[in-house]
Image (cartoon, one colour):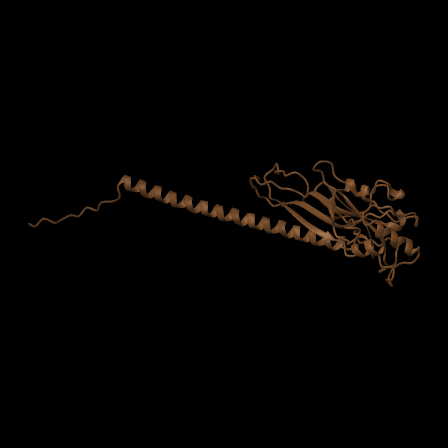
Length: 288
């Protein structure tokens, strides 16, 4: 009788199983790390895109508002002529920015330099059809008049409050509602520098000769009461509000202030711009 051969199949040994499991775990962990890294990068890029969009928006909005500071066109067909427009025009052109005590109706209203690293505030004069709040007070729609806009930080909200300049000058019984509008949230600082123009070689060019803070503006008022401000430097510190944690080891600086490092884990960016007033040269060289 012939013997029947029996084959025995040999499986994986315990060592081989442990090696395969270990390799599988390594591959899995690597894939998870790659996914987390890609997810973090995507979140960061999204947050960076949002904060850059906010920065571009607010700088563009402020530029549009500030470029006409000190502007007054007495020949405009839309100008409300219920007051002496020669006096009004001369006042706005000589006072593009408002200092404290300029208006008896609100002596505290004026551009201020924040103490230390605290935010600044800016108050400007211009001719427009409405204040920054969208209010035209009691003027007819489309009429141009003396507008006073006040820009400041309320907590972390950049706001603007509009005033009727004719009320502030005592020419009307009412005109400042005290209302304000929010321009942008998550703003953690706001700084301004003022471009002063002084004659060079006895000739007034209308160009910026020095940049100063609000606390020094009064020292540059000319003999005829003119504040020779022809431009602004503005810096806005914005923090992104997305749920993102970033180790802050990058120092930031706003205009002439000392560098600082944010004390929390968030995405911060500084946006700066130089804005020259459109009619500054004409006001300084031709007296308006």
